[in-house]
Length: 416
Image 1 (tube, rainbow, N blue to C red):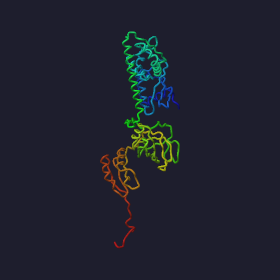
Image 2: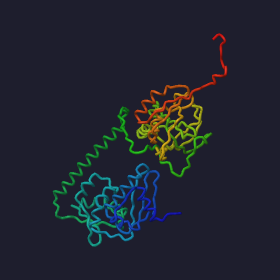
Image 3: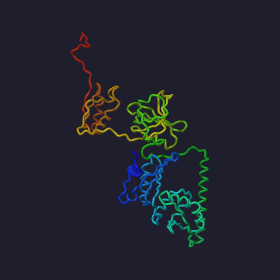
Image 4: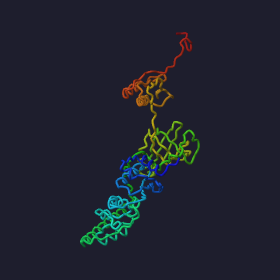
């Protein structure tokens, strides 16, 4: 059953974990999601909401920040508001002012200084802003006010045209000071531009790479859509252009190539089978993600299945890799079991885990004891003793022995 636009808005609030109080809820009464526009190339999602009146600025900013935080691993976000009955006042015009200036597409070094002491106001149902002189007025009219008017409209204000009024009380000295500041700013920009050109033209490759920190789950490439079917590895038996698998990393290797790129090699299992997954780095961000993909993590991978000429086996060349949360198995029984028959890696060809792994897992599940019964050997006993002390689990020491009926003469020597 399809959800209404109002219900979609409520689902969005749940997803971004935003819980407004009752007073705030009234501002969002009958709020609806009109559309979500996805800009693939720029990795930006625009959420278009419809509300009754211009939102109080604090509520708008709080919601925008929650949406940005919730989607930061997927894309940049922008909140676009459409209002049915907008009421423009001096209060909401001034409250949104600094937000609008900082988010409008005005790229001038003088902007922050010019707007630092200005606040618009309403006069004759039209927004007005004060300019110190003709130079400032021309700058505002020709470069600044257009983007500002557009950004006001994006946050819910109606289409408006600002009026600029010159404050005649400002002296000629202030005009001269403005020109001097602008000249200094232009000179600084010219110096920075020249330095950038010289840096780009330099052929020196010895430069320190910035350490890129991974914030949150690892993501290489794009987000893998939730609706793409996940294949079991055991079902993949030939080359394919695109598959999605997920599993547990049990081994990893990072190789430094002569081209200065790096190659990530992961061994991953979904417990139906296993695959080697490869991916080449593109930049420092990819290399930081390579370092963050440790053994023991769960990942979802989209890539192509190819015959590897070196390994002589099918491997997956990854397009996208996402770290995922894998819910661990839990023992929810009121009365916990105790495992009486257990083989460790001390049983030849019969197990891969150490007794320390088993004891730690038993402790997680709340088991008070566990037995170790390897094939014809007691080599796991010292490690079992240490693991039991560490995890407060009682160890039951046993063995799986091979016995014969001593009444049957299997091998004998008459001389003895």
